[in-house]
Amino acid sequence: MRACYNPLEQSEAPLPIIPYGTRYVLPPEWEWREHLKHQIQSTLSSWGYAAVQTPALELFDPQHPQSELAFHLTDRDGTLLSLRSEYTAPVGRMLRADLLGHQYPLRVSYAGNVWLRGLESELGRLREFTQVGAELVGVSSAQADAELLELARDALESVGVRFRLEIADRSFLAALLSTSGLGHAELEHLSDIIERKATPELREALERYKVTSGLKADLLELPDLYGGIETLERARKIARTSEALESLEKLEQTVKLTGRDDFLFDLGMARRISYYTGFTFRAYTPDFGQPLLGGGRYDTGIPGAGFAIGLERVMSALGTPPALPRVQVLALDFASARFARAQGYRTELLHGSSVDEARLEAQARGPEFIAHGGVLERVNP
Amino acid sequence: MIEAHLPLTHLTVALPKGRVLSTALELLRQAGFPLSIPESSRQLRHFFEGVTVLELRNADVPVYVDLGVADLGVVGKDVLMEAERKVYEPLDLKFGACRIALIREQGASGPIRRVASKYPRVAARYLEERGINAEVIELGGNIELAALTGLADAVVDIVETGATLRANQLEEIEVIAYSSARLIVNRASLKLKAERIRPLIARLEGIVGG
Image (cartoon, rainbow over all chains, first blue to last red):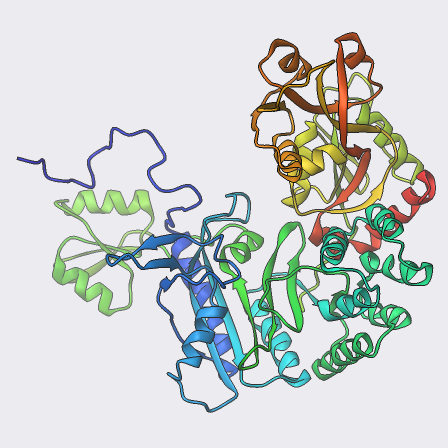
C-alpha cells in the first residue's frame, strides 16, 4: 500500500522546496502587501476604474510580445497554454470579446500574479510577482494620456513611495532614424546602440554607415536627449520631420494638460514592449535600479493605454513592513474569547492553561487582558 | 509628487580591483572627485564626501550597476559584452585597450568543433554569426592551454600585445571585437541623479577626449 502523503513531514530532498524565483509570503508582510494592493486599487476605483480579473491560464499566443519569456503548460488535449505574463494583452482580449459592451471609453483595473520564466531571479526581479494596473480603452488623445499620468501619480502617492515619472516616445527617434535611408538591419543596430546610450559606438556606426554629417550630428544627440521639461526644447532643435515635430507637440500638449512640470523625459529610449505604439512612461525611485511602474499607449485595433505597478518593487522601495497588530486578549475558553472579540479586541485562544499560567503568559507576551469565565481581566497596563 | 532627491545626491561607484582601479581613480580625481585609496588598504568599501567606492571583481561591476546597488562603474567592454546587462554605456575611457580574438595553435587547419573561453556568450554569438557548429567550454583562466593541449580546437580570449600568443606558438585567426574601459551607468540613476552624473560624464569626456 502506498504511504499517505503528509505535507508536514520533513522532506528528505535538499532545499529549495519551492521553485527558483518564487517565495513564501509570511506575516507581517502578507497583511502589508494586501493593504498596499488595496490602497492602490481604491485609488484606481476613485477615478472610476472598475476591477476585473483574467484567467491565470491563457491560450498560448506566439504573437504575444512576451511569449518567449512566459511559462508554458500542455492541456489534456495537447493545447499549449501559457501562464499570464502581463495584463495588458489579456485585458485587451477580454474587452474585444465584448464582455463589457462597447461603452467607450472603458476604465478597468486589475491586480494579480504574473509569471515570467525567463527572468533571472535577483534584487527586484522575481519569476512570480504581482502587478496592479489600469487600462483606459477606446480613446486616443492627449487628454487620455494625461489622465493615465495623473492616475499613475495618484496611485503611487497613495502608498507613500518616493518617485519621479519619466515620459518617453519612440516615435520621435523613429522619425529621425527614418530620414537616414538605412535598411532594417542597420536601423535595428542603431536602435540597440542608442538604447544603451553608447555614444562612442553610435559615432563609429554612423561613420561606418556613411550617414551625412548634419544628420549624424543630430542622431548623436539622441542618447543625451533626457532630463526635465527642457528636453522637449532641445529635441525641437533637431526635429527634422513633421512626424518628429508632431510627436513632440503631442507630448507637450499632454504635459500641459496635467498642469505639472516635474516630469522627466527620455527621447532616446529606443526599445519598448512591442505592443506600444505611442508614448510610454515609467516611475523611478531613488536607490532602486528597477522602475516601479511602466505603461504606455497601444493604438492597434481598439486604441488604449495603461500602466502596471510592480507591487514587490514598491514594497522593496518602501522598506520593511510595519509590525502586525498585536494580540490584545488571551482567552481561556470560547465563550470568553467570543465576548472579547465582540468588544473589538484581537483575541487568541490559549489551550489548556490555568488562569495563573495565562496571567504569566500575558505578562511575558504583552496582551493587555486575559479573558476567562466571561470577563476581561487587565494584566498589563 | 513626493520629492525623489536626497539633500546631497550620493553616488556609489563600482570599480574592478587591480590595474583598472588605479587608472579609474585617477580619472575620477581629475574629474573633481576627492578619492584617494592607500595602496595598502584592505577595505572593500571606501567612503568619501558624496561618493562611495566599491572594489569588486571585474565581472561583478555590471551586476552591481544593473541592479542599482552602484550608480556607475568602470569596466572593460569585453566584460560588458559577456555580461549582457541593461546598463547605459555613455563613455569610452580609452584605457585598458585589448581585443577579443579567435585563437588557434599555429598551423592548425582542422575543423573547429570545440571552443574554450572565459567569454562563453561572446564565443557562442561569434560562432553562430560565422555559422560554425561548435560547442563552447567555459574555462576560468590560462585559456590558451586549452588550444595547446587539445581540450579545444580554438579559444576565444583577450589579446593585449600578443606576446603570450607568440611565446606559446599560437596565432590570432580573427579579431571578434575591440575593447577598452567604459563608463557604465544604472538606468534609473542616470535620470534621477542627472545633476551629478551628467556633468561628470562631460568632465570625463573632456579628459579622455570624445
